[in-house]
Length: 164
Ligand SMILES: CC(C)(COP(=O)(O)OP(=O)(O)OC[C@H]1O[C@@H](n2cnc3c(N)ncnc32)[C@H](O)[C@@H]1OP(=O)(O)O)[C@@H](O)C(=O)NCCC(=O)NCCS
Image (cartoon, rainbow, N blue to C red; front, side, top):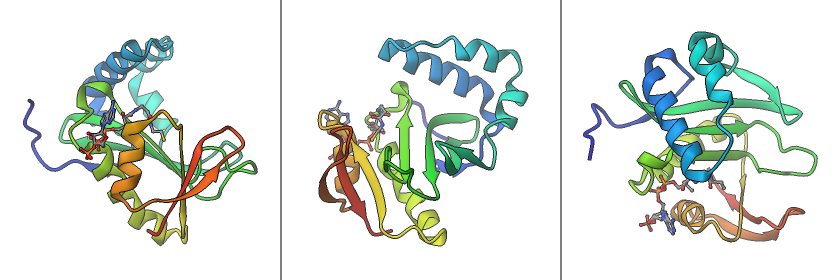
């Protein structure tokens, strides 16, 4: 296993992790059989790509902020905090993914752990997370943070509330 230079932290998107981001996302997309054509544009001008991701932006119709989980030059995954729930509450307040080469090493659990105080500072309390019923890994992540189940949303995803 790769030894990380320091414990990973949530950071704003940064060109510092360019190679690791592109390779990690490409590996993840290929693993999931997902369309990775967006990576061509991102790799052509990474600084421009990063500039479009930084800061609080209106996404899904609500103010949202994107974070990358990084350690030195390594990029491990992404997390988004929606400052408000969308009208249909789709996706909850927090969404995340860890790219495939870094999965199964506790990073999603740690990443969500770092996001919760940010949610609290933003006045998001409790925090809604939604998880597909077949996503055992994400359910374990939410369980590690004492997510309280609350039925299904309109997309058939399980709803969990976490006190940040
Ligand atoms: C869900 C996801 C974020 C988990 O990331 P991760 O860094 O591997 O998670 P962790 O290492 O913190 O593992 C959390 C738990 O899930 C378990 N787990 C990991 N992969 C698993 C799998 N395929 N099946 C069952 N459990 C799994 C781990 O054993 C761990 O449990 P433990 O702590 O009780 O041992 C990652 O798989 C992912 O990005 N998936 C695609 C996107 C996604 O589903 N996002 C979440 C949407 S709600």
